[in-house]
Length: 157
Image (cartoon, rainbow, N blue to C red; front, side, top):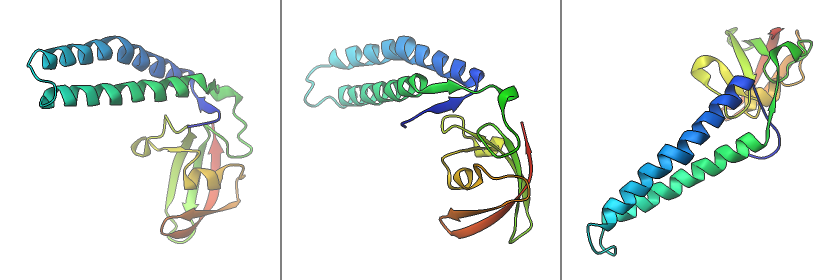
C-alpha cells in the first residue's frame, strides 16, 4: 500500500493494538518455537526449524505491512463527511441498472474492507467508480466480467 490510508479512529486503535501483540507476544512465541527446533539437532535436516524460520519471516512481513498502514493513516471523522458526493466513509445506496438490485455499501480504506459487513474499499473497481458521484448519477464500473452501471440512490454519513 502506498499513499494516504484513510481510517476511522477505532480502526487505527485496532491496528495499533494488533501491532503491539505481534511485536510482543507473537515474536516471543516464534522465538520459542525456533529455540525448541534448534534443540532437536542437525539444522540441515530439521523441518521444524525451517517451518519456524518461515513463520518468523511471514510474521515480520505482517508487522512491516501494519507499520506502513499506521504510518500512512489519516483519521477521518464521521461528522466531517461531505454527503453531497460519494467519498470515503460515505454509505452509498446504489441500484444495478441491468437487474434493478439495490444494495448499500460503505466506502472504506483497504484495511477496513469487509464485503460481508457491507464495506468496500475505495480502491476496488466499484469504489473507484462511485467516488465523486452525486445522487442521481450513473456510475459506470469496469468489473472483471464487463461494464456494470449503477445509479446512485442515496448518500449518507
